[in-house]
Image (cartoon, rainbow, N blue to C red):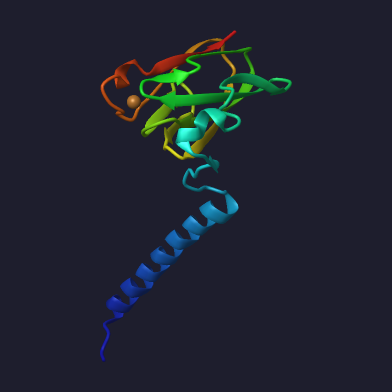
Length: 155
Ligand SMILES: [Cu+2]
């Protein structure tokens, strides 16, 4: 079989690009720890009110300046729909659905997760600046979807 010189070069370049891309993905996954969001836990949506920590939704301080916000998403409200923390706090949100798929997004933060029935969504944000941060459902969940929101108040 005869292979042209330029053909050989292009084949070699293709291989180099392919290996570079694989190396970049490998470095991202194994060195930088980049991965798809995955559930931090599982639970039965029908038993959500008996399953800790969702039997006591709300905000609690777990360490100085560190809070855990346990939130139930249901059609069509968040429980609780108001969270107060002092400025400079780190808040770990743990959100679970009592019925259908919902979303949880806190404006002006990195918080943006799907809330899938049976799974616990967990995401952490730091609130440096005081003010009100609206959070809302961004997965269409039915008739009252548009009124499914709340706020984080940073004091
Ligand atoms: Cu919704």
